[in-house]
Image 1 (cartoon, rainbow, N blue to C red):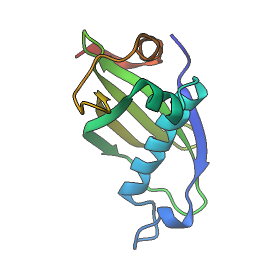
Image 2: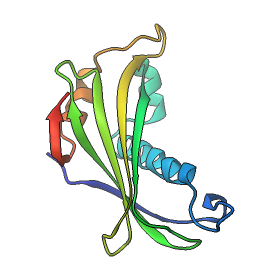
Image 3: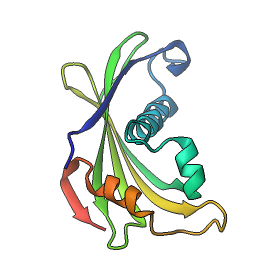
Image 4: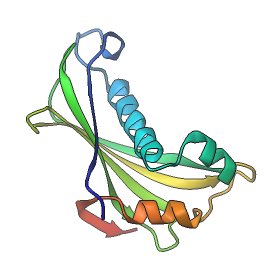
Length: 145
């Protein structure tokens, strides 16, 4: 199992809402960015996904909000696996957003399904992709789905 994947970033101008703090959709975008960085850092670029004719599709998000972030605030965005089904066709991605001091800010639990981009149907991922997910850092409450 690998270490928790983490990307550091900050709150930008376009991340703000009318209350001058980070908006809900910005947290989601930071999580998506972290996911794409994870796959790319493991050799699975958008071109590789296209060659494999595979995409991941989020079918459900659950969020827990803990505190505000404001313009310029730094954050750590982490990615772990919360569970996988027996075939590997479905898995739970957990993104945690923390302050630099590890204070919880936001958690996003996303149920993901692997999709064949030609048939638009759920599939079992290619072996290299399944192995990558199996090797991800796991949450403390990891479970079979």
